[in-house]
Length: 222
Image (cartoon, rainbow, N blue to C red; front, side, top):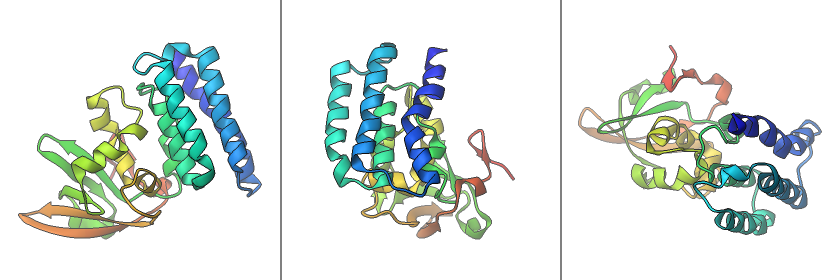
């Protein structure tokens, strides 16, 4: 129960300044982002020390220190992904920065699902029907296994099963793909290497707003 409260209250406080500046169409300075991170760190230590179960306080503080030092050289979306990594490092599925925070403006119009023999396109926008049912081999030229390893720190995964169920959607967010080094730049069009009917091919997906996705309980809603 405390973890759920943490999600509702702490995440709101961390991003309150960012939300307010967004309304005013202003960009946060590095100092303001660092202040948000400092507040996150202080609040975790003072009010939520029980979160240090899967990671020690020392290890988490080191991550925070390293991330804080890098903020001046990062873009806004990289900072948001970085903050998400800090919270996800606790390894609790209900303690997280909501997925929509990173994905609401741009997500690839494809839903992936982890079957026993690999990751497949479970659902897709009608403009990409030729990819439906295809097995995913690589993303932007990077083998799917390596891509999964790169996004793992961003996913608030309690265990491997949770990661398989809820982590794949993080592969469809351009901001995450760039921040985690899967793409060299923040790009709104990403190529997936696919296999279907014994044939391999590359297909590019152009990002759409998250609100335009028809997805619920991991599956595509038709």
